[in-house]
Image 1: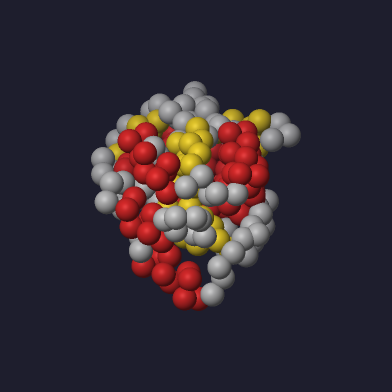
Image 2 (image 1 turned 90 degrees about the vertical axis):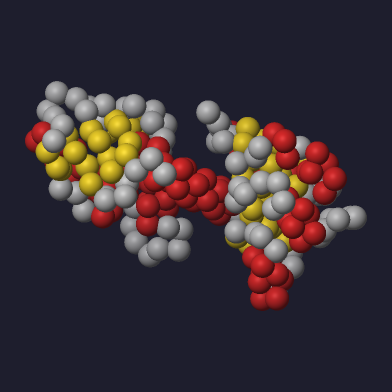
Length: 226
């Protein structure tokens, strides 16, 4: 099922730009140009809300407090207000992140990926175990099993596997995988993904040589065959 993003901003050109970009990524996008319109759409149960602060009528801070009475999804503030006080206030009223305008679409999309991934992982951890073909992934113990045999993976290898299992049959570039597993603020090289995936494949094939899990999509990246 596609993740549902709500954009709340009175600047229609910015909303159109964000909506088109997010829809190209496969998201379902809801749009509201003021607080009352956003509140009316909350029964749609958005998975994440991108919320401007400076709007006519109810501002983003007030709206965030109202939203928090109905839904618990991540809220990302976007605003030209860039003081420490503004950022702290945004987090204190119930926001999960704060991005200063002007921002790059790449940063916005990466933060959306990160927050949705965290929400999905929290949901999966409630069940502790995920099944992928012949593998069992224990998210509470950070362990992977083939039948009753434990396959030894490093922390990063396990994180990559978990990310893939949560997004079966979706193609990701090395850069997207690196940002999701290492974080957008990490200093490193996405080419390390190639080596990690090579090691993951080799370890799985020792136990399950007949089944393919991670497929290379030439010229693009990788996907998990779900």
